[in-house]
Length: 407
Ligand code: TTP
Ligand code: MG
Ligand code: MG
Figure 1 (cartoon, rainbow, N blue to C red):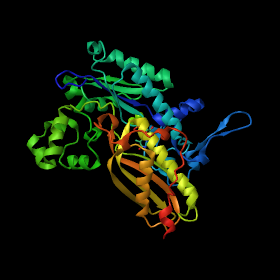
Figure 2 (tube, rainbow, N blue to C red):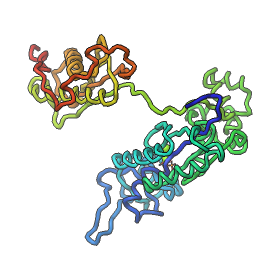
Figure 3 (cartoon, helix red, strand yellow):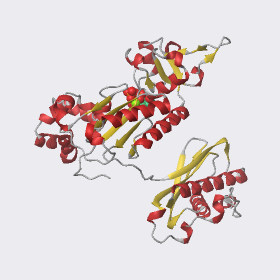
Figure 4 (tube, rainbow, N blue to C red):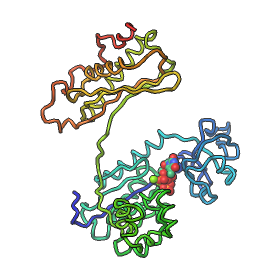
């Protein structure tokens, strides 16, 4: 467990050219070529009668899309994440263009994270292709600054996914995040506090997570371009320029100090379910259909809460109309609940407060003000899982859109 006194070893692991590398697993013939990910369905590779594949290239692209990522070969031509695809096409017309397939990337994301957790369970999820890992408690880890475990983690990720990653291992998250970038791809970078002047101070200030475009512009205007420039600046000057909070953080950051813990579980703010209809539905004319969908969403939401171990005190709805305008309404309950009936009743009351004369495109139900079931000392009867809820969608007697008929 985290203790501010004990020396820590924190890893930051980031997958190399993640979306592109996942695509190369199924199209190995593209290895070594510049490839960018950012196309749509029309850029799906075609399999020819002789079994070879035909790929779209950037020169064929027209549209307003952006690149999600590119292989290192494409980066050598100046093509990077978030660049307009048309601009990329001018720089690298012969680069292969592939469509984005989030389901596939999520699958590999789960695989690499599971492989890491099997070795080092203290993992903080930082998005689809990166995590922090607190290595401090692993047996023997301090003997070599984490090198052996780092190599083991890279090996495990490679075995589970066929993909390479880069890892930084240092005493804190700030430094590890910087270090995982230093030797990409397939890097393993260890750093101790005494290495900061040589390895960290020369880096550009904007490399730091927390120094965005605005702050780095202001720093540059003050003549502060590298992390070392910030370290050399007068702390009082930084506080005067950036305020006590951010200025104070800059002072600490430049010395490589950061005591944020690795947060192994995050508490969701809300849980929701929504659905877009195949055709727009009208609250009165499609009452039965809407009613079923509405009930179904509430039952699914109750199931989500129960599975995740949360109860909610604020139930909300979201509607989107045929003119794409959206409205939300919510209602705070007297006690927390995870019961489908209570959720449906509250959502129904929210619905009464909406003008439903237009057709609907989308309907959603949201459970907010969540509390962990374990933290609710004396659960209200309504917070107990209802007996019928785990069974197939129960049908409730109450007409859900009954309020509409009286309009
Ligand atoms: P990154 O880790 O930033 O980039 P990367 O994994 O492609 O390359 P690197 O080797 O430098 O780590 O982002 C992870 C994935 O997130 C990336 O593969 C695609 C996606 N992404 C976007 O969709 N848009 C963006 O602007 C960025 C930066 C990433
Ligand atoms: Mg990455
Ligand atoms: Mg990343």
